[in-house]
Structure formats: structure tokens, C-alpha cells
Amino acid sequence: MVRALAPVLLAATAFGQWVEVRPAAPAYMPGPVDSNSPVFWHEGQFHILNSANMPLLTSGANQFLADETEIVRIDSYVNIPLWIEAAWQDKDGTLFAWYHHEVAGQCPGSELMVPRIGALISRDGGRSFHDMGTVLSTGNPIDCSSRNGFFAGGHGDFSVVLDSNREYFYFYFTNYSGPAASQGVVAARMAFEDRFHPKGAVWKYYQGHWDEPGEGGMVTAILPATTVWQRSDANSFWGPSLHWNIRVNSWVMLLNRACCEPRWPQEGIYIAFNPDLSDPNGWSAPRKIIDDIGFGPGYYPQVIGTRLFQTDSVASSTPRLYIHGVSHWELVFSEEPPEELPIVEPPEPFDP
Image 1: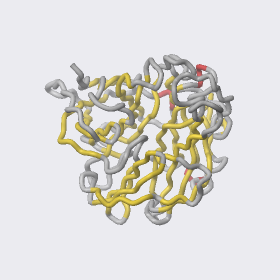
Image 2: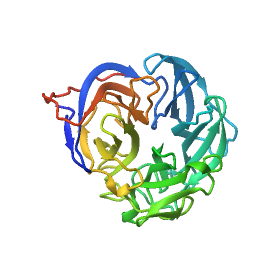
Image 3: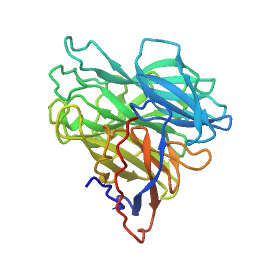
Image 4: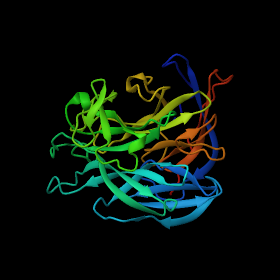
């Protein structure tokens, strides 16, 4: 039987957190989903950016009533295709966003790509963006002999969140390149004051310090790959999705786990906690909350908070859990164990 593993007790830091997976009425993101899908509120309306090679913007009263969709305009085609995977809105309405771009042609005769991460800015509520260029890229040689099915190296599949003191934007992303100790989920950060000029302002976490340049610098994996991405049986966490959970007063990271065949079959959805973004080694050991969703690839787990003005990066006790743009579940966060431990049955397969 395909089932969720719920609830899970995690005592990663100075306190424990409980999370329970509960079934909920079906909900669907409005656009095609091939990445994390950032949410923001503009002029009192819920907005979501869904991406599959190019982003779409959809707005409405809330996540269940968003149906006004338009194509997002980018002022440069240098970094197309792109997937907008994170966004943050300033008090004056300026929207900062970050994208995953896959560079083709690095391995002639192969479909392998090399991803990198770039920055955008919008002054019209996400309808159009100015491309501020690449801010994170690998410093390791690409490896066209890679057999994972998609990437010959690079950085991508990420979240960007602002700390509570508004000092730094933290990037948690996936590194597909270099020595084994650097592959897996890694981190970087950018000073809040540099948000208008991000080029050269992002610094990677390496051997306990935030001092390696975003473009070309080295990284240390905080969740290292068990089997490197160059192999056909790659085994690694990837695609972190982060939010601050008000209920348990902690950052929460949802993760994919690829294992152990080409083209990244999904082994399960995992969760980890950390109250302090500045301590990349403070994350709890990831624990599985779902084995398999019963349909589709099952990638890109993320939450969307259910209260007014909550997003994919700020939520409270019962956010909706989306996987690949589909939600049949809510997550229930608490500091005390629930009275009952229900089995969550898989949803019926569907044709999206």
C-alpha cells in the first residue's frame, strides 16, 4: 500500500516538533508546475508564479480562487528558458525573484544541461521582470559523462528566504557538480542591502564560512549526496523548499530524494527543521513523511499557508502541502504529539 508516514517526531534542535500529514479536499495550482512555485500578495490579492520553461502569473482572492492567468514578460532572452522558484516582496511593492536557468549545448550530442541561478526584479506586481543576471554558478568542470539523465553539473532547484532580522537572503539549493563532499543540498547568502545589485553579492557557504563567491566559488554540502550525481544510481536530497513556521517557531525544509536509477525516481518526501538559517549545520536529520503520492513524478513538495497574507515561505499550523502542483493534504504542525496516528491513503490517480 502506498501511504504517508505520519506523524513524524523530530527533535533536531533544543526542542521537538511534530508534523502530521492529513488528507484534505483536492486543490490544484493554476499553471503547469516544474519547480517550486513562489507566492506573494499584491494589492490585496494572492499571486502565484508557476513555471515550466517560462513562468505564468495567476492571481485571485486566495490559493483556492486564483484564476486570472497571464504570461510573465522578461526583458532579456539571454537566460531563457527559466523557472522562477523564489520571490520576496518589499514594503513598497518591489518584487525580487530568483530563477533556475538551464544552459544547453555544453555537452554536444547529449541532452545534459548545466543549471545556474539568477535574479530578477519587478515593479508591476510580477507581470514583467528585469533580469539582473546570474548570481550562483558552479566553479567545477562540467562532466558530460554524467549518467543521472538530466544534468552535467551546475547549481539549481532551490529556495530563497529572508531571515527574521532582515540581514540576509539565504539560498538553499542543489549542487550537482564537483567532489562528493560538495554534492547535494548547499547554501549561500546575500546581504539584504544588496538586493538591488545582486551580481557579485552572493556568497557560498564553504567549510564553516560564507566567503566563497557565488559565481565559481566552492561549496560544502550540508546534506551531502550518498551517491554522486555523475552516476546512474545517484542518491541524493534535492530541490529544498523552505518556509518559516509560526506554530513551531522554526524554519522547515521539504526535500525530494532521488534514488537510485537514472532520471531521478522519487524515493520519498522528507522534512527537516532548523531555527537558525545562519547555521547550515543546524538542520535536523531529514525524516520521510511520504513514500510516494501514487501518481506522476511526485517532485517539488512545498507548502502554501492558509491564512491571509501567508505564502510558500511563511505559514502557520495547517498549511496545504502541494506536490508537483497538486494538494490532497495539509500538514499539521505542533509541539505536542497528536492523540491519534492516522494512516493517510493515497489519492486516486488523475490525468492533469
